[in-house]
Length: 106
Image (cartoon, rainbow, N blue to C red; front, side, top):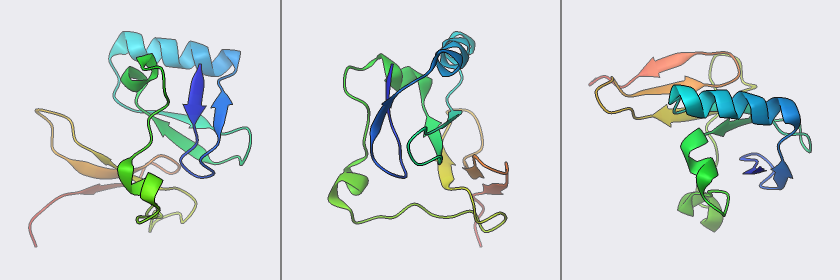
């Protein structure tokens, strides 16, 4: 199973424990799973449904290098990911510490 790290942009093979975890996440219909990159030791947010594609996903913004990941204001070690689930309230979440920031009008 090939996965692209969002920190170092390198592609790595999931180890057996990670594959087992991702298989479980796919079976439960989870939209987000966090893995550790063996190359840079960063946390990698993974959408288990995208793992079924042949090429690991990479956002257009990251390809062009125009947007950098947003660091978590709570722990400064994690990266915020935007979670947009149908039927749920949208929010920004940190995969490292679990901090959640909900979208609310100012």
